[in-house]
Length: 138
Figure 1 (cartoon, rainbow, N blue to C red):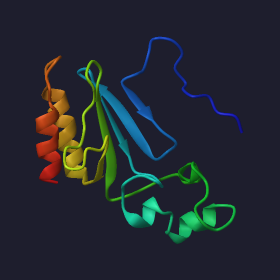
Figure 2 (cartoon, rainbow, N blue to C red):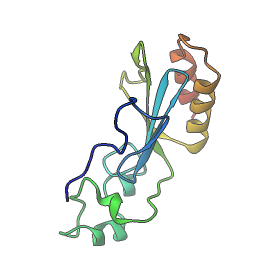
Figure 3 (tube, rainbow, N blue to C red):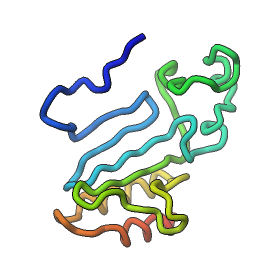
């Protein structure tokens, strides 16, 4: 099955997007927040490593092998998510606790606070310290 990268042509990236039924992204005030909760992401171990019985049954060899295994489900769930935040002009906001480009094992409350921080930022604001404080209190 061949897939198109996106349903949008021209006009750049839209304000909302989903990725392989396992996450989403939003563009807000010059920032892009990507919230992913699929296999291979820094999320609940049973989701990250495809250990749940339903996931194993959905793969061809009964163990996680498919990148897009989440596409085989109507609903894909996890209690934690991996988040990456980019600023259009300044690049990726880094997780200063481990100098990673992502914030792993984030609760829903943490993600909501990230979105609130981005939504209240003014264009050009450096929200790196605020984002890291939110993550550290997660």
